[in-house]
Amino acid sequence: MKTQLKYSWQPVYLAAVSDLTARELGRRIATARSVITTRAEELANGKNEQAERVALMDALFSLRFVELYMRRLHQGHQINGKLSRR
Image (cartoon, rainbow, N blue to C red; front, side):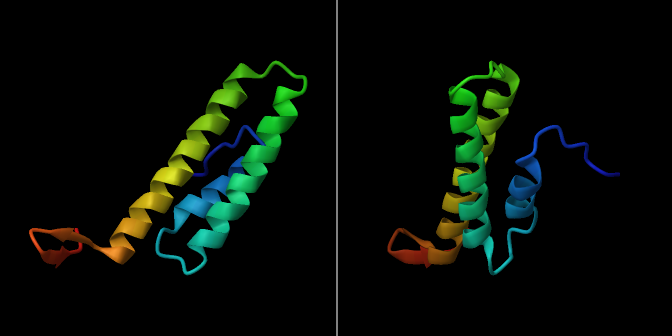
């Protein structure tokens, strides 16, 4: 089943979050963040597209979550003096 995309920036976003094991995840996230931020700036300067603004903010939040989650997985963290990878 193919996902219907409504906005021009969605393919870049989906590429960034579709394969969380990809070596290029950081680059994909940075590219998606750049495209999404540019689109958000375009909308701020004119069109009244509230639904797309909400989708843009959701996408940025999701990218940040994935970025922090993957960083945590790769770095591990201390629990009771022991290194743990949850």
